[in-house]
Image (cartoon, rainbow over all chains, first blue to last red; front, side):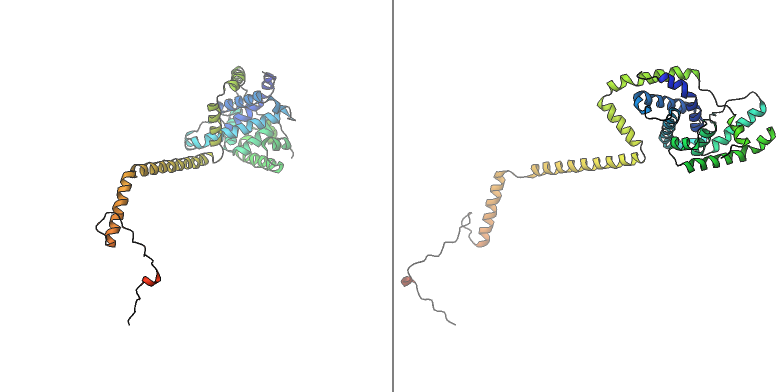
Length: 168
Length: 142
């Protein structure tokens, strides 16, 4: 390999995996997109040279690849979506029953968010990106990133508040 | 935007770990998919890739349909043209037949003109012009 792909994988695969799993809600799609991202990098290693922030650049690649995949599959599987009740969660399981209930509810609430809001919420909360970085990663205006986050978080809050208050 | 307790609580929810087996699998696949593939890509594979890329673009399928319709129209047009020329060639009479038809036409014209003796149309004789003294005076009577 012309450059250190293994280092890139070790440093960023976890973040990409969590983002993609949260975005696609499907483990197979996540693996496909993850592989596509690293294949693109291996074919065009020069694309990484101009990137200011490796993580943001890779998240952007992953987001674009995931959108392409969803578009390709969207037309084919649109009519089968209603049968898909089980979605894959990006949240780790817990041994504590209260925490398990909270995480299950959080996972369901995330699944109900529109994909664009879910992506922003994930990048802000779990990838630790700033709104500027999120805007650059998703190629959206800064205000759009902030408003999507606010709308998404409000929905999560409304759904999880009773359970959150109970556990707290 | 200040982070409130609820956001902090969410931030502490851990995410699932990427499966360990994926590392070997993905890196091996990437290695296999990069260098040798570029060398062995045939023109056909490239065309196929370009076609797939095209139809997966927004409204790509529609454009492909329009393109296919145009190709069909052109093919029909060309085949119809070829059919017409070959039909014309088939129905075109031979030179002998054309000559016979020409003769028959001349005969019919001659018949219409009153010359029934010959099958050839006899051209009218040009008026003979003699000396002025030999001409008979023509008297027009009212």
